[in-house]
Amino acid sequence: MSKIITLVEELVSPILEDMSLELIDMEYVKEGSNWFLRVFIDKDSGVDIEECGIVSERLSEKLDEIDPIPHNYFLEVSSPGAERPLKNDKDFQKAIGKNVYVKTYEPIDGEKAFEGTLLSHSSEQLSLEVTIKTRKKKVEIPADKVALARLAVTF
Image (cartoon, rainbow, N blue to C red; front, side, top):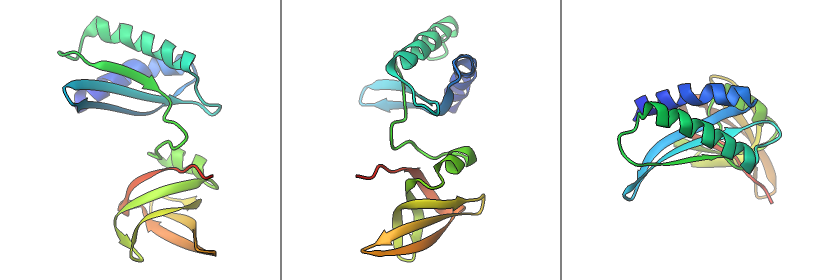
């Protein structure tokens, strides 16, 4: 499976570069009896359905040429949405000052899920300001304990 992801990344990268878009994430998964190849793209001002369609068409043509996937699958190209995952240093740097949701592999101060403002990020740790009832508290989360991190929409 990772071979397919690597190959698709090689195919889609020049398409995205040409359109000034960024690859956010990819997944190749089986859901029920169907396989899905999902490509999540974005840019600072957000992507629209037309851009997703163009990337899908161009990538589909490339995939048809080399036919790396031996069975039927659905290709989906979309935006990661408002609650996009934070996967790398660049994602975390862009998220500083924004509301994020972080889930950890093991409890920190008795908790495994945190939502708050990302204050800072380094290769060693994240700093969040979380609100507990009416009090604000700073939480330090070791980077190697982060299981999942994403932007969080607040209402």
